[in-house]
Structures are given as C-alpha cells and as structure tokens.
Amino acid sequence: MTEVKYQICTRCVMDTSDPGITFNQLGECNLCTEFLSKRAKHNYHGEKSDEAFQRLIKEMKAAGKGKEYDCVVGLSGGVDSSYAAYLCKKNGLRVLAVHVDNGWNSEEAVINIKNIAQKLSIDYESYVLDWEQFRDLQLSFLKASVPEAETPTDVALLGAVHQVALRYGVKYIISGGNFATEGILPKFWHYNAKDIKYLKTIQNKFGAKSIKGFPLFSFLNEMYYKLVRKMKIIYILNYVPYSKDKAMDLLKNELDWRYYGGKHYESLYTGFIQSYYLFKKFGIDYRRATFASQICTGELKREDALKMLSTLPYIEEKAQREKEYISKKLNISKENLEDLINLPPKWYTDYPNDEKRLNFIYDVYRKLFKKDKLGNF
Image (cartoon, rainbow, N blue to C red):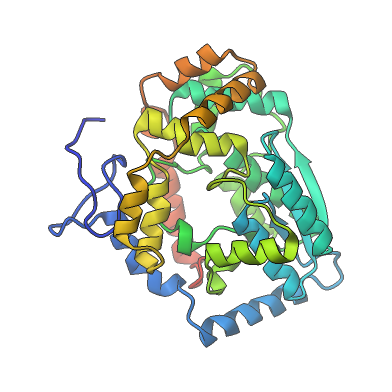
C-alpha cells in the first residue's frame, strides 16, 4: 500500500487511515457520501416505520406458532444487543437469547446478560467456543498482522446463532447491528468476515490447529440458511428512533445494566483491539467510524467529534494492564505480544481471498432477493 498525503473529510471525520477512502472536489469522502445516500431508506420514518415494525412483530409471532420461540437474539451484554432483546420482549415475542462465549467477557457483560435474562424473563443459552482452537485462530490473525484481529469472533457469532436457531426451528435472528451508529465502516478496517477463504488462508499459514468443528459462516452456509431454511436476520434497531445514550439510560434504570467503559468493551479483547491495537499499529482510531455516522445522522457536531478525537482512544496504564492479561490468556509472553503489535502492517489484500467472487455472487443475490428498506434480506 503506497503512502498518501494525509487528508480528513470536510463533512465527517473519516480520514486517510482508511486506504480506500476517496474525496470529491469539496473534500467530502466517499464513506459519508454513500451513507447519506442510503440514509433515507434506513432512517426512522415515524408512523410508517411504526407500522412496518408492528407488521414485523406479527410476522415473527405467526412464524413461531407451534414452536418454543419466535426469535433468537444474539446477546453480548453490550448496549445494542441488550436493547434489541428488550424491544423484542416488550413487544410480546418469545425470545431465546444466545451468547457466544469466546472467553473474553468483561465482568460487566456477564452481569448484564444475567440481569437481562432474569428481569425480562427470557430463556438464555451460552454457546461456548473451544478455547484452544479459538485462541490459536486469534493468534493466527495477530501473526498475519491485519486489522481483522476479531474476525474469528465475528465468524463464530454468525455461525453459532444460526446453528442454535436451526436447532429450535426459529426463522428470525435478531441483530443489534444498526445503521444509526454503525453505518460507516471502511472495508480496509474490517474486511468481510464471511470470506472463509481469507480466514482459512491465514489459519493454514500461521495456525497450528484444525478449525474442524468451529462454527463457520461462509457464503454457502448463508445461502443454505436463507434460501433452504428460510431464515432471516432482522436489524430491529433500524425500525425505531434509536439513540444509544437513551437506550443506555433505559437499560440502567429498568434492567440494572452496567456500562463497560467503551465501545465493544463488553469483550475485553475487542475493546483492546479497537482502542489500542488498531491505533498503534495502523493509525486507525475506531471512534472515527462511529462519530462519522453520528455526524451524518445529526446526533453529533463535527467540531465536538474532532475535540474528542484530539485525545488518545486508549488510556496508557489500562492498555498496559490489558497487555499483561491478554498475553497470559493467549499463552504468550508480553514481549511476544509487543512483537506481534510491532509487525509491519498488512491488509486483507495481502492474502488470498474471495473478494471478487463474493462481490459477484452478492450482486446477483441482491438483484434476485432485494433487501427491504430497513436492511433485512
């Protein structure tokens, strides 16, 4: 990747830490331009969105007749997934919450999951990953020196919740993903977790263990679940006027929910990767993507975002403690972890992947099975 002159978007706060970013003559980036072009489709539209939401609830209840559950909710203990579970329960759905335990839960996340299940009176299952296999996968991605250090988790989340839903015959999987706060995320920061060729390439090159039995989620898996089993992923937060701050207040007041100290810090490893690892290794401040989305939706002023970005995304003392903990849990020395962080940065394009083939397949798929206006297939 050739070095380019630093530039920051004049409308949002995305910058050239994304190697794929481009700017128009006004200095506005392609990321927020694309976001704004899609915003009208995904925004909350008052009565129209309310009616679509109620139709969806009825649809899920009808599909769940004769079964134990109407939907499966992937629950991390974070604000988005917690609020998604809350919405489902408050609208009369029979919910099965599924948590994928990859060994990195924060204390707050564990408490949140317990409180949500108990106070909402919803059933809960924990899908526990094989730790030795998962640890080896995580080390492989650190050795590959790419930003996608959390791809093994992302793959496992998709694979596990679909497996559980299939076991119960549930057609609807509820995701806390949403357009309001996650609509901007550069491909070079977080390449497609469904590209199993990419994952297998890295594991075969750097790993020591087989990934047999790991809950993979390839394109073929996805097509089986969607086309054969007629399952859908529903981004329920796109149906409501979603404000993360207001959602956090509600969860705290009604469910004794606890804040874990930062975006995705419900997982200690994810928090470290996004706040420290990506910044130190790639110059990627993950807050930029969230702030850029919030600027485009009017929730945040650009000048306020720039002020927050003038501070480091991590606390040095905390990061050092995290390195001690993470190195011990990965069964490597802290010096070894430092060496991995200091390896020359690479991108997904440096390894064999299926990007071209998957882009073609998804383009065809989108034409045949169009997304609805709220992002669901």
